[in-house]
Length: 187
Image (cartoon, rainbow, N blue to C red):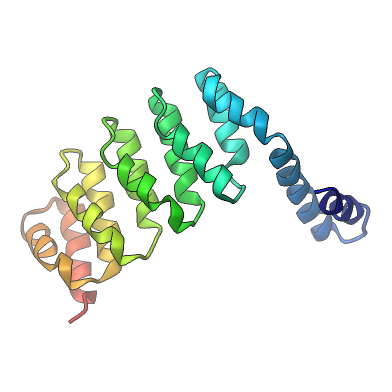
Protein backbone atom coordinates (compact mmCIF):
# COMPACT_ATOMS: atom_id res chain seq x y z
CA UNK A 1 0.00 0.00 0.00
CA UNK A 2 2.90 2.35 0.73
CA UNK A 3 4.15 2.10 -2.87
CA UNK A 4 0.69 3.04 -4.12
CA UNK A 5 0.52 6.05 -1.83
CA UNK A 6 4.02 7.13 -2.85
CA UNK A 7 3.10 7.02 -6.54
CA UNK A 8 -0.13 8.91 -5.93
CA UNK A 9 1.54 11.55 -3.76
CA UNK A 10 4.17 12.01 -6.46
CA UNK A 11 1.44 12.49 -9.07
CA UNK A 12 -0.15 15.16 -6.87
CA UNK A 13 3.03 17.22 -7.31
CA UNK A 14 2.90 16.96 -11.10
CA UNK A 15 2.00 19.74 -13.51
CA UNK A 16 -0.89 17.96 -15.27
CA UNK A 17 -4.10 19.05 -13.55
CA UNK A 18 -6.07 16.04 -14.83
CA UNK A 19 -3.49 13.64 -13.41
CA UNK A 20 -3.47 15.52 -10.10
CA UNK A 21 -7.25 15.16 -9.85
CA UNK A 22 -7.12 11.46 -10.71
CA UNK A 23 -4.34 10.95 -8.14
CA UNK A 24 -6.33 12.81 -5.47
CA UNK A 25 -9.38 10.63 -6.09
CA UNK A 26 -7.27 7.47 -6.06
CA UNK A 27 -5.53 8.55 -2.85
CA UNK A 28 -8.93 9.01 -1.22
CA UNK A 29 -9.76 5.39 -2.07
CA UNK A 30 -6.43 4.10 -0.78
CA UNK A 31 -6.94 5.96 2.48
CA UNK A 32 -10.52 4.68 2.75
CA UNK A 33 -9.22 1.12 2.34
CA UNK A 34 -6.71 1.78 5.14
CA UNK A 35 -9.63 2.83 7.38
CA UNK A 36 -11.66 -0.24 6.47
CA UNK A 37 -11.64 -1.63 10.04
CA UNK A 38 -13.20 1.61 11.31
CA UNK A 39 -15.81 1.57 8.56
CA UNK A 40 -16.60 -2.07 9.31
CA UNK A 41 -17.08 -1.17 12.99
CA UNK A 42 -19.40 1.71 12.09
CA UNK A 43 -21.48 -0.51 9.83
CA UNK A 44 -21.73 -3.15 12.54
CA UNK A 45 -22.47 -0.96 15.55
CA UNK A 46 -22.97 2.67 14.55
CA UNK A 47 -26.05 4.80 14.39
CA UNK A 48 -27.96 4.89 11.11
CA UNK A 49 -26.20 8.00 9.74
CA UNK A 50 -22.77 6.62 10.69
CA UNK A 51 -23.61 3.38 8.89
CA UNK A 52 -24.70 5.27 5.78
CA UNK A 53 -21.57 7.41 5.79
CA UNK A 54 -19.44 4.27 6.03
CA UNK A 55 -21.36 2.60 3.20
CA UNK A 56 -20.85 5.60 0.93
CA UNK A 57 -17.19 5.89 1.95
CA UNK A 58 -16.45 2.32 0.84
CA UNK A 59 -18.94 2.19 -2.04
CA UNK A 60 -16.31 2.94 -4.69
CA UNK A 61 -13.94 0.26 -3.47
CA UNK A 62 -13.74 -3.22 -4.94
CA UNK A 63 -13.13 -6.69 -3.58
CA UNK A 64 -14.70 -9.47 -1.55
CA UNK A 65 -14.18 -7.70 1.79
CA UNK A 66 -16.22 -4.74 0.55
CA UNK A 67 -18.91 -7.02 -0.86
CA UNK A 68 -19.13 -8.84 2.47
CA UNK A 69 -19.49 -5.58 4.41
CA UNK A 70 -22.21 -4.33 2.07
CA UNK A 71 -24.07 -7.66 2.08
CA UNK A 72 -24.09 -7.49 5.87
CA UNK A 73 -25.39 -3.92 5.76
CA UNK A 74 -28.12 -5.02 3.34
CA UNK A 75 -29.55 -7.04 6.25
CA UNK A 76 -29.51 -4.16 8.74
CA UNK A 77 -32.64 -3.33 10.75
CA UNK A 78 -32.72 0.18 9.26
CA UNK A 79 -34.50 0.53 5.93
CA UNK A 80 -32.19 3.41 4.96
CA UNK A 81 -29.07 1.37 5.67
CA UNK A 82 -30.40 -1.64 3.73
CA UNK A 83 -31.35 0.63 0.85
CA UNK A 84 -27.94 2.34 0.76
CA UNK A 85 -26.15 -0.99 0.89
CA UNK A 86 -28.25 -2.41 -1.95
CA UNK A 87 -27.58 0.69 -4.05
CA UNK A 88 -23.82 0.41 -3.38
CA UNK A 89 -23.85 -3.30 -4.23
CA UNK A 90 -25.59 -2.56 -7.52
CA UNK A 91 -23.07 0.13 -8.40
CA UNK A 92 -20.17 -2.28 -7.99
CA UNK A 93 -20.76 -3.94 -11.36
CA UNK A 94 -19.67 -7.27 -9.87
CA UNK A 95 -21.64 -10.44 -10.54
CA UNK A 96 -20.70 -11.74 -7.08
CA UNK A 97 -23.41 -9.46 -5.68
CA UNK A 98 -26.29 -11.11 -7.59
CA UNK A 99 -27.33 -13.34 -4.72
CA UNK A 100 -27.55 -10.44 -2.27
CA UNK A 101 -29.48 -8.27 -4.74
CA UNK A 102 -31.94 -11.06 -5.54
CA UNK A 103 -32.39 -11.61 -1.80
CA UNK A 104 -33.13 -7.88 -1.42
CA UNK A 105 -36.10 -8.33 -3.78
CA UNK A 106 -37.83 -10.05 -0.84
CA UNK A 107 -37.32 -7.12 1.53
CA UNK A 108 -40.38 -5.73 3.31
CA UNK A 109 -39.41 -2.18 2.30
CA UNK A 110 -40.56 -0.92 -1.09
CA UNK A 111 -37.58 1.45 -1.15
CA UNK A 112 -35.13 -1.46 -0.76
CA UNK A 113 -36.96 -3.53 -3.38
CA UNK A 114 -36.93 -0.62 -5.84
CA UNK A 115 -33.20 -0.18 -5.32
CA UNK A 116 -32.65 -3.91 -5.82
CA UNK A 117 -34.65 -3.93 -9.07
CA UNK A 118 -32.80 -0.86 -10.30
CA UNK A 119 -29.46 -2.44 -9.38
CA UNK A 120 -30.28 -5.72 -11.12
CA UNK A 121 -31.42 -3.78 -14.17
CA UNK A 122 -27.87 -2.47 -14.61
CA UNK A 123 -26.62 -5.96 -15.42
CA UNK A 124 -27.18 -7.66 -18.73
CA UNK A 125 -27.24 -11.21 -17.44
CA UNK A 126 -30.00 -13.60 -18.47
CA UNK A 127 -29.82 -15.33 -15.05
CA UNK A 128 -31.64 -12.30 -13.66
CA UNK A 129 -34.73 -12.53 -15.85
CA UNK A 130 -36.46 -15.00 -13.51
CA UNK A 131 -36.11 -12.91 -10.34
CA UNK A 132 -37.07 -9.74 -12.24
CA UNK A 133 -40.10 -11.47 -13.77
CA UNK A 134 -41.19 -12.30 -10.22
CA UNK A 135 -41.34 -8.57 -9.54
CA UNK A 136 -44.06 -8.16 -12.18
CA UNK A 137 -46.52 -9.35 -9.52
CA UNK A 138 -45.46 -6.63 -7.07
CA UNK A 139 -48.21 -4.28 -5.86
CA UNK A 140 -45.98 -1.20 -6.04
CA UNK A 141 -46.28 0.49 -9.42
CA UNK A 142 -42.74 1.84 -9.19
CA UNK A 143 -41.30 -1.64 -8.66
CA UNK A 144 -43.45 -2.95 -11.48
CA UNK A 145 -42.34 -0.22 -13.91
CA UNK A 146 -38.66 -0.64 -13.03
CA UNK A 147 -38.83 -4.43 -13.35
CA UNK A 148 -40.60 -4.28 -16.70
CA UNK A 149 -38.06 -1.75 -17.97
CA UNK A 150 -35.16 -3.95 -16.84
CA UNK A 151 -36.69 -7.07 -18.40
CA UNK A 152 -37.46 -5.28 -21.66
CA UNK A 153 -33.79 -4.41 -22.07
CA UNK A 154 -32.97 -8.10 -22.43
CA UNK A 155 -35.12 -8.61 -25.52
CA UNK A 156 -35.57 -12.19 -24.35
CA UNK A 157 -38.47 -14.22 -25.72
CA UNK A 158 -39.14 -15.65 -22.24
CA UNK A 159 -40.73 -12.31 -21.36
CA UNK A 160 -43.12 -12.32 -24.34
CA UNK A 161 -46.24 -13.30 -22.36
CA UNK A 162 -45.62 -10.59 -19.78
CA UNK A 163 -44.98 -7.99 -22.47
CA UNK A 164 -48.17 -8.96 -24.30
CA UNK A 165 -50.14 -8.63 -21.05
CA UNK A 166 -48.76 -5.17 -20.21
CA UNK A 167 -49.10 -4.00 -23.82
CA UNK A 168 -52.84 -4.70 -23.51
CA UNK A 169 -53.58 -3.95 -19.85
CA UNK A 170 -50.75 -1.83 -18.45
CA UNK A 171 -50.87 1.81 -17.47
CA UNK A 172 -49.45 4.32 -19.93
CA UNK A 173 -45.80 3.81 -18.91
CA UNK A 174 -46.03 0.02 -18.68
CA UNK A 175 -47.77 -0.18 -22.04
CA UNK A 176 -45.08 1.94 -23.70
CA UNK A 177 -42.29 -0.20 -22.23
CA UNK A 178 -44.02 -3.43 -23.26
CA UNK A 179 -44.67 -2.23 -26.80
CA UNK A 180 -41.02 -1.21 -27.25
CA UNK A 181 -39.91 -4.58 -25.87
CA UNK A 182 -42.17 -6.50 -28.25
CA UNK A 183 -40.56 -4.72 -31.17
CA UNK A 184 -37.01 -5.60 -30.15
CA UNK A 185 -37.56 -9.09 -28.77
CA UNK A 186 -35.60 -11.99 -30.22
CA UNK A 187 -37.12 -14.79 -32.33
